[in-house]
Image (cartoon, rainbow, N blue to C red):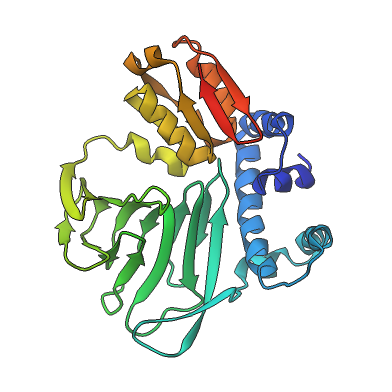
Length: 308
């Protein structure tokens, strides 16, 4: 597979035909899938470096990126670049920040300076310092992420979002906090975390296999016995007896589309199945059409899909 096509895909610029070509190539062998993941990680490292450049000519910058791939791959993967600057509340010292943004229909796996492993879901942004300070490990999320936190009892790991925050020492948890939706929910896989609202008035602790949802400034705790929906870190969008309208909401989240359901008949249907992120929205809708009777059309000018 040509790297130029892969990088167009990573940037969200690939055509439908190119997306299908990449999907077919990736599914042809496990080696191809591993190659795709390696190229994605390399692309993310290059993106971090590119954010420091103030070049106005984006095409020239993209050409330089392709040259970097050939001569400095190892350096780029390990290099840390301060892309943004902001002040910690506890200190007036400016700290260099890195920012990773994931386009629609994709996901990214990164390692933080402390060794914490993070998966970022589609349409998410994570900001974190080049190096954590002596008191805490604080980062900022807009979107959804899965964290496998490196244990450090001297430095709490804190993820701040629009609606609240999560504090952990060494644990694994999923946090969904899209600012545009006003959502905030945390699911704990193992360990223990403390979740709190942004105003500090609401706080609770979570045990494994439980989920905290913040709504109307109140936390509700739910038992989790099915982790199907968190298989997004594997590149899968999974549904289990999910109502059609909820499936459309998930597609809106993953693919950044606006979907208007005009066919009221589809609301009585539920669906169980899975799709790859890389399948694309059109492919997923065509698969659903095999079991559910509906048609769909696009308003490309306004970026709306109508379910009819």
